Length: 124
Image 1 (cartoon, one colour):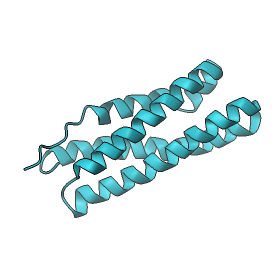
Image 2 (spheres, helix red, strand yellow):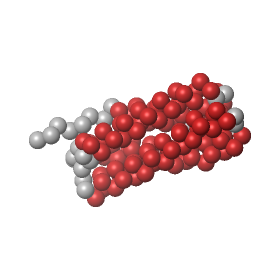
Image 3 (cartoon, helix red, strand yellow):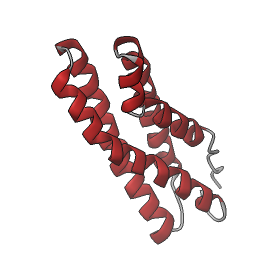
């Protein structure tokens, strides 16, 4: 991906990375007060948040410095979004609605949906 598409991608990816960053402490807080079976699910979610945060940081740097995003980089982000989406669905079944909202799962899923709508550039 190159050119004008980078601007919109960088914005969406940056927003996703920021939400992931800002959600980590909320998840850790919930891990301290919930049941053991929920801790495992929250731990998986936390790992996904940290991975996506750093991946978005890297991809946003590529937007600025390299002025392109490789199809493999975009594909990796989409795969990570799929994983965190599944984590959120799993958490939704086991958490109270107010706790589910508190850990920003809906916001994360909406941001990932935006990432999934980004089209890969065709190889030349």
